[in-house]
Image (cartoon, rainbow, N blue to C red; front, side):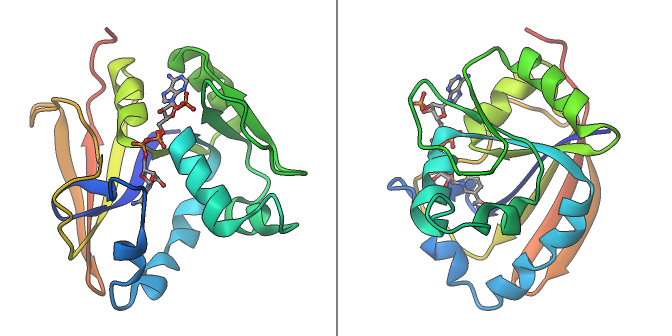
Amino acid sequence: MATIYYTATSLDGYLATTDHSLDWLFEVPGAAEAESGIGDFMAGIGALVMGSSTYDWLLEVEKPHEKPGAWQESFGERPSWVFTHRDLPAVPHADIRFTQAPVDQVHAEMTAAAGDRDIWLMGGGDLVGQFDDAGLLDRVMVSIAPVTLGAGAPLLPRDIRSDRLTLTGVSQVGQFAELSYDVKPKAAT
Ligand SMILES: NC(=O)c1ccc[n+]([C@@H]2O[C@H](COP(=O)([O-])OP(=O)(O)OC[C@H]3O[C@@H](n4cnc5c(N)ncnc54)[C@H](OP(=O)(O)O)[C@@H]3O)[C@@H](O)[C@H]2O)c1
C-alpha cells in the first residue's frame, strides 16, 4: 500500500493557472487519449484526498452534485476526503468526508478504508506537502504537459532533495512526459 501523488502539471511546475483554470491542459493535442490511461492507476486506488480548490473545480466543471452518477463515473465508490475549513456542497450518494483534522489522522482513516490498495493524493501541491511534512508521501507520478504557465497553483511547494527522490519510471504518452519517483519519507516534523 502506497500513498501516491498523481497529477498532471505544466512544464514549469503548475497544476492550474492563478484563476484555477485547466483549459491549458485539455487543449493539449491528444489530452483526452492520454487521460484515458488513468483507468489502470485508478484500479489500484482505495481512497483519495484533495483540497477544497480541487473539489471546487470538480463541482464547477463536472457538476457531480447536479448530475447523478457523475462522481461515481470518475471515482467509483471510493471514499474521498476533502480538506476544508468551509461548508462545501456535498455530492448526493458519494462517500465524501470533509475534514480539517491533522493529516496523519486522516491518513490513518484512509489507510483503514483503502485496505491493501493505494491512497491517491490528488492535490493541490501544498496539501501534498502537508502529507510529506508528516512523513506520509511514498511516490510522485507526474504527467508533464508541453505548456508553461509562468504562474499558478504550484506542483509541490516543498524542499525535497535528490537524497529523497528516486526516478523509477519514464514514458511518453502522446505529448505528455510521464515521470515516476519513489519518495523516501522524511522524518515527520
Ligand atoms: N493539473 C492537475 O491534474 C490538477 C490536479 C489537482 C488539482 N488541480 C488544480 O490545482 C489547483 C489547486 O489549488 P490549490 O493550490 O488551492 O490547492 P487545494 O489543495 O486544491 O486547495 C487548497 C485549500 O484546501 C484547504 N486546505 C488545505 N489544507 C488544509 C488543511 N490542512 N485543513 C483544512 N483545509 C485545508 C484550504 O481551503 P479552505 O478555504 O476551504 O479551508 C486551502 O485553501 C486547483 O485549481 C485544482 O483544480 C489540478
